Length: 294
Image (tube, rainbow, N blue to C red; front, side, top):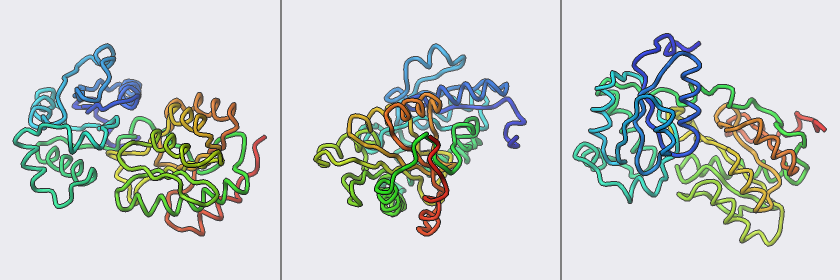
């Protein structure tokens, strides 16, 4: 058990959208930890009001208020869970003085720079941001084929190509998902998110089968912006005619894992997790490691 879990007090959750915050709350409670929740008004679900015992709402730009509330709650360790849409971060927020000062000081105006700087401010205020998957280890898949069907030869070739392209893009903080058809890049994720990228790809594919590749960033900071795949992603793949999905093992959260794989199997979608590496030879080797699971 990680050292941080030895202490069941002083925990906080900064909640964005989606199921991520709910799963973290459940995982923490299973280990005797009740978290104080700071929910982002523009993103977090109103349902958090029902499940969180200590909940405070703040706007995206209210950094000082968020810190003050966490300190009032005695938070010394916090988890950042749930998506914050990238376009909102830089276009829709009204920063308070602390966040405005931080934004002005950023050498690069990208998500990694901003969230990394916010994490540093938290540290200075006595609040340590921890690995956001700390309570969700069972949702991180090991390397291998996760579905009954193994990728066919064409899908395997598209995965290999897609992994190379996606990792170059992720290294530049452009996006973490690409959609491939016949070893050609049909769509690249920018700020719209994975599911929208998949649906957009269908408009250009002209009926060709699509392969979706979603990767982590090099030296992925597991405190924030961890890759997530959930049922909506599989549903988007179904609509778009995508037949296979490649993800990074140990760095990608599979929400509703059992149901997700059940739906993928029913649709004949192949899902494979690869060792998170930039070494193309290792990627090619892993393609041949698994036999069809029937």
